[in-house]
Length: 161
Image 1: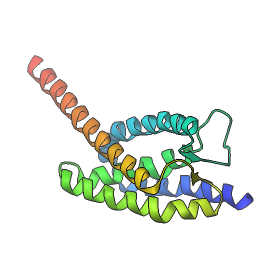
Image 2 (image 1 turned 90 degrees about the vertical axis):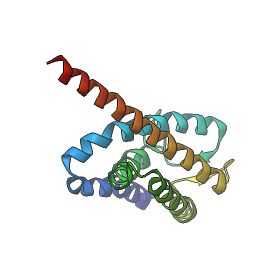
Image 3 (image 1 turned 135 degrees about the vertical axis):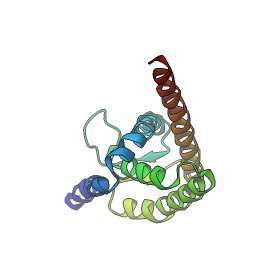
Image 4 (image 1 turned 135 degrees about the horizontal axis):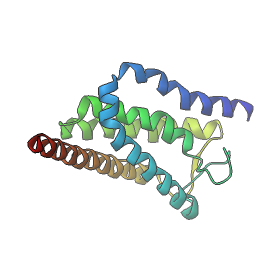
C-alpha cells in the first residue's frame, strides 16, 4: 500500500518534467482545451463514482475524485503533447488518441489495478475505450471553437485600431 502512493505520486509528477520541452507558446495555446477536459473529467469522475463505473480504493482526500492524479498528471500534460503534434490534422489526432486510449485501457488499467489504484466495476474495457474516444472528440471540438473565437476577437481588435 505504501508503494501505491509512491507510484501515484510519480505518475502525477513525471509527465510535468516534459513540460519545458513543449514550448511556452504551445503550452499556452493548448492549455485551455486541456484544462476544459480536466474539469470535464472531474465531473465525469463524480458521476462514475455514483454509478460505480470504476473504483479507486485509495482516497487522496475527502471530496476529491480518485482520478485526480491521472487527470492533472498524464492526462493534462499528454493532452497538450497530443494537440501540439496533431491539432489541425483530425484523422491523425483521432488515430493517435485511439492508440493511446487502447494502451491505457488494455495495458495500464491492469497495472493500476495490480498496484491497488483503480479497478473497473460496471464499465467494460470496451466501453471505457469508447468513452475515451468521445472525450477526445469533445476536447478537439473545444480547442477548435476556442481558437476560432480567439482569432475572431484578435481580428476585431486589429480592425478597431
